Image (cartoon, helix red, strand yellow):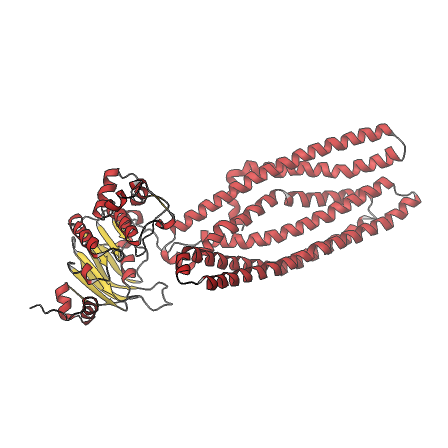
Length: 578
């Protein structure tokens, strides 16, 4: 948790002024009981009105100064804590952007959202409390103890007995609640995950009439979270009654022993009142520290979760010696590539793949669901790294390229067409923000998206909803393809990105791609044979292994898997080529 406090350094002025102003308030609060004692003993008891007025004026002045200190502390502690939280949130978000897909597989989306929101709020609140209550309470307690000892060393023995009892209660409370706070955050992760999945798939839920099922799933996660939270708060709730009981017993003891001395005349009434005030301040300050330590326990769990992400080492790192050259040809070579999502723990997704894509070729990849097609193409831009073997681009291992340079040379359309809130124009030029309108339109025309875009009320300025919700599946795919084409990449990867496009539009798209990608390499994952018939080479994957490769005619003649796909899609026997 201490590692996160480096984020306070840029805001050291506010972080320093806050406790200094709080010390001013504490000093004024420590004066009040003494001034009250003086009013009682020298003013009221001696019927000295002028002394009462002078002391009262001093009390009011001290209260005003204390008010200024308290308000100033609140202002500067808020500034420091809010800026602290903003900086942590900024760096945490940036860190998430640097993580590889394998790293992100370890953190669920719901967990990352919780860490970026609730966990940061927890430590942000803790920082503010540290600059205020954790300065006020200890110093007020120490100052009150000193003043109580000065007033009556004999009665101070009562404090010497009460304070250790309070610390024992604090220790037991923290020991009981600390493990539960970690469980609370985990349960909150689960709630956020269920919420995200439900909101993202609410149309599917409604279409399949699964409202009751989703309600039960959320209620289960919500109930688990609530039960742990209630259990924790029950333990925390015990704290205040015990502290109040110790406080009241201490005050009764002071009144009993101090009252006898006051009656005997050996102890002034004003001093007894001041002593009781100091005892109250000590015990309430210690109880505040106890509650503060509980909050620190909560914040520690959150800080550990944040630090877990900040300290995560990206699985994909920049090479020590960067390859600065760009792709000139676009030749792709897979050399005995084996890949597993979690090395050493899972069965490899790909097994010893070897093939070559020559510059300017269109390579199609086909296979059953789960055959490893998407995993294969994800290795080229290093969304994941190979487990064994190597991938060469123009003879250079992909791990030797700078990541930004490598991915800037590769255009990729993912299996799921993800669009962002904003205009269609901004979505198309997402990878090239400075692209001119002419380039955007040319890319849209090549992707067969221009006509439907111009048919929308605001054309390219049409605002898209979250994830492009106001577009059809085929429209989203075409905009995603236009986004990749705008980069004019040396290598284009289309991961089943025409599945929602009708065959006529797909044919026109394939023609445009053929013209646009001349001299460039294209990898195409498809389910329809009609999409791959004109490819220079077709790779057939089966359970992560390359079982056949060749042209459409060659595979129809020699590959049983390809023949089965052909028969299932065309409903007729395989034609003979000869």
